[in-house]
Length: 408
Ligand SMILES: *Cc1c(COP(=O)(O)O)cnc(C)c1O
Ligand SMILES: [Zn+2]
Image (cartoon, rainbow, N blue to C red):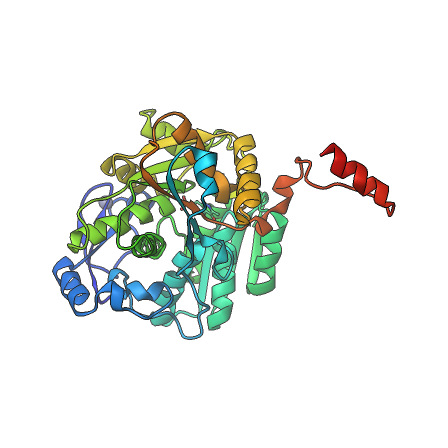
């Protein structure tokens, strides 16, 4: 655990040495840790090897900000995904300077690969040959894909509602996939029990503090790709809250290491039918949604495990939180597709939908510099577009094509 100097429980505030526990021994699953580094040492290593001078082209470019220095041998390339600026975004959002961070191009086509790459490297370093997780889909695909690349067994638990393309992506790469009758929460509980019983390495992101560290690399890249600048706003989708927490942690670590002097405001976006974190941010008690209802399966999380960390990130960054309807989410998929060519799954377009809404409501202003994340590929859940009239059926008669073109 070389560079990690301590783990701080977000619930009770106690500090522990790195490597001993996954969650706080006093608080159990509620006691999620924040990972701390030796920031003086970090300043020193950044002086020796400034970010600008580095040549590694994956997330381990940021090894001094991570709990370990190298990927597991054979690991597919994770991270260093593109940041794009499309002129069209200004028309669509009303904001002058908008950037899209495209995390659909990771090996398993979602941002989850950043967390899995760290989790698997730690498991391998620890001599573990089997790793497990519960997931709404993408963490599982990611774990299965990256474990396969390094020759580690993977045991995956998904809820009944996982979209089929994700199931098959997992099935093609995992040692074993279990489809649990019930929700993500049920799958999570079964996985937790199995992990304890068979002693597998636990990749359940929400409670394993090191995985948020992996997700953090997305914003370390953004900082570099913006020419070593901090944006005014960072817009992220929220399920368990790990992506959001990770992006905040990136800027917090950069600041603690003396690289930057500010943190972007973070806008968390959830679906109307499942918005426990947004409601909690607006002061409505502990986050819980009894009947999550959205087509964005990756953020269909009724009981977010990492809400404390997410709330802290929203508050400390002076951020904001909004909800968007499923219809806005699907429209955002179409807008992104039509105007950028980036194809997003519903949770993947949610941040963009949230940006449009927040700009419309004046939360984000016209002259602010905004980055939004596209967290997962549309190929993972193409059926989400079924309700849209995107396909024109024609016979073999060219006049049908002509008529269709004329009526368009
Ligand atoms: C997991 C996931 C999210 C939500 O991330 P959390 O860390 O659970 O908040 C958003 N989008 C996609 C595509 C995901 O796979
Ligand atoms: Zn505690």
